[in-house]
Amino acid sequence: MQLAYLILGHAHPGQIIRMIERLRPSASIFVVHIDARADAAVYDELAAYAVTVHDVLLAPRKRCYWGTYGIMEAAFACISTVLASGKPFDYAVLLSGQDYPIKRPQEIAAFFAQHAGAEFVEAFPLDKPNRWTPQGGQFQAMARVLHLTVNFRSRTLHIPLRRRFYKGWEPHGGSQWWALSRAAVEWIDSYRRSHPALERYFRYVFIPDEAMIQTMLANSPFRERIDGRAIHYIDWERPNPKLPRTLDEEDFERLRASECLFGRKMHPEMSATLLERVDADLLG
Image (cartoon, rainbow, N blue to C red; front, top):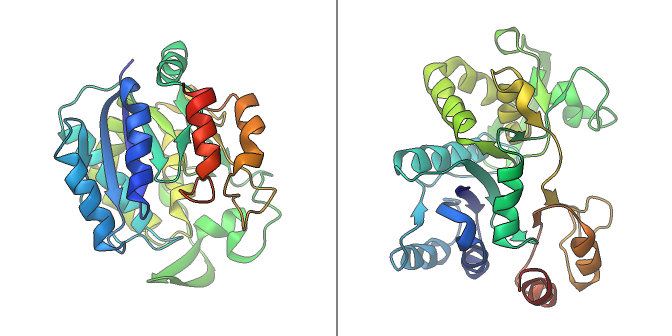
């Protein structure tokens, strides 16, 4: 089972490199995208590292303001880069630069081999009761995708006028993070390129990284293969200092007990002791 890891980063290059080193035994290739707004030193350190190894590529950089289409542009840049690389892979796994494996590389590869053919993406119908339904304003489930959202840098203008959803598709949403088969990744890349109206629509969606891939897969030939189980351990209940929680040593036993493959989010200082314990006790 060969895995491609697509990593969206904006800071802490040493932590990204540490994650790559831990994951390398299960990886065919790593593609790293560094936010174009990040300090030059972040990109430079990753670029210097990439020339010393054989399996790390840097994707073309996009400006990634929260809640905007720039994050989708970064993800698509990673997809385009990995497909153009010619490297073999069975699954592509989208990670953030603040993720970290909590299972050994062999266990991660075995998980995907055991579930070969499944598409690991959370995708719930937005027009039915879901975990976003109670949220208000532009965060409410259907408002996210039907209302027009205009972005200017880090500011968003929410225009509560309902649009007709793309092509009569059923809108879906879910977590940004996914792991998809090569066939699904190739379909996403091909469909996006051949249907520019899709990109035009989602460019004005609020937080499109939590709706676009989810909607595409749920309206695709792969919809029956969707497996919505979480492969990331993320704590949305206990702020540290805000949500999602930045994990620390207090979270170690929760990570040990979790069936997830990755934990997020980690910080090189706040999570330092936790990362050492994960390395020694979970990955050693």
